[in-house]
Length: 188
Length: 407
Image 1 (tube, chains in turn orange, blue):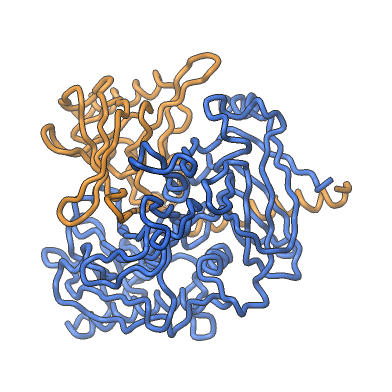
Image 2 (cartoon, helix red, strand yellow):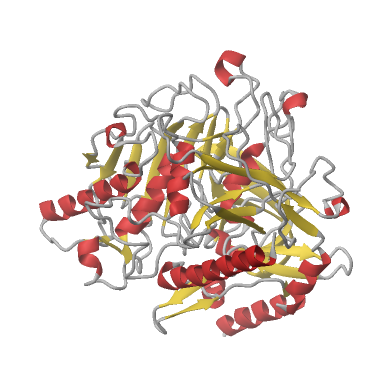
């Protein structure tokens, strides 16, 4: 690629970037679930480790029940093992699916913001919004936390502006401090 | 940000290697909901291949049938209309549903045409949605799946073999055929309402019904989410009181769609007689240093889960994006070799192509249905033939790219 071609290519990418920013500023949103609302809407918050998942047919629909071991719980009472239900899955010869539902792999550790009560299946508040993946740096062993919906610009109708909310690559101690502070504030 | 940059640099031993050609090939990497046929069934029912097939509706005359529940909110008015008379409300909502369907059947270069649509019918039950073999839209049906923050969702049931039937619906004649797709609007969140286009300006704190419906109807047609900002299939709804893209007009009924949406539809429902949208760009996204590939997954020979985007050089518009990283040739299984394919592009144009990790506005979880369903194996499906089993690796989100022309 010549210098002129490379420059033209970079210009195109730059212009595309500007165009995309303009587009998103006009129209991308979630139902706003800022961190305090996530905490507020959760009956339990826990660091969990995925054990297995299973699909079943109930109420005429296919559901995936994922079993997690509770590593630590930060809000609410939880037994040592919980089941989280999400819509969709493969059952016998049909596959039911719903886009935007988080999926988990055995062994994976996440923080989940849960709705429900012990003795029944839990749900994840806001699906991707209530799912925080834990990543471990292979070299240093340091853990960071990233929300599945991180980096999505969220429209705040009160301030009439877009803000980037969400947790991304946050050190786990900082995340825990943030979460515990919010839980304590709401407990007052 | 600094930390992220460091991580990126650490893992930045990746190079995107692109080459272009104009031909149509079998391997695909687009963001659709993929289905692998059940190979434990006889070959006449499974078609014998472990290569994923995008889930889709049949596109023959009158094949796509949709009905909608006329119950618009009992305890709370969920759907707001300009016309407040009972009959006027229903007509206004039906107009929006028809308009949203028209958006998708008006795209040129696809086999999905106005004749593919059956009659839009009404049903008086609030609980019309369910696994009954009928595509339904429900505005006042509670569902266990709803949680705060979920506006609406579409539950799609797809056949992984020929001869499957749900309820009284049609028996599947193809692998990947959608047997039932239901759209649920959240009726239980008291702060959430949806407005028809005529009522939106008077209700700026409600969501645009047409935008949400148009998005969900694409799931009914087999779309997964798109990672292109501004696409109708971007996973997040427009802000309160606003709508996605521009409103459809008589002259341009597909106006709300982006080029990415149109290209996706042409991939899903390709028109064999089309002579315009027949260009393809394919290639592989490979690491500069093969040692940077996951050690625990020796079957992975390229970057998996890269978002590969084609940009029209003349206009700077994103024409299409695809989730790359794999290829498949019958009888399968999928090879995770970094391949991508962007097909059904308009010919006679020049494109710039770039690859990016899914670590921005869209995360791998947002498009997981297009990624995690590429494989089946003896663990997920006891009795699966070992030679056609595979395991989907995690999406690679820690790479940066530079481009170079074909040698």
